[in-house]
Image 1: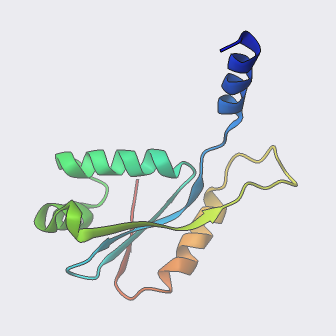
Image 2: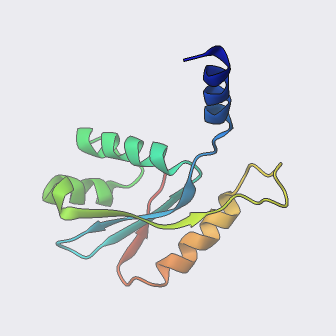
Length: 118
């Protein structure tokens, strides 16, 4: 691979913004829905899976208990909505308020809901 191609690939990688949005962990046997949001969904999914699998997810003991009782295979994990970056204000870096509002809108669509805390 030539030098210019490598440089372009590196620059493309560095310019890539993480996917942000609202996600759900549903415990299928109980119907309990755990809703969360993050500005980096991939990182969040990896981190949560790791913490839940080793039994160290302290921010939400009910989610940890359901995970241990029913197992990973009895959960549906889904991205519910992706939030786009603000093209009119590219300098904006904090989308926490926007994501919280989206999560609240989604929480109204389920009956047995609890928010995932970080």
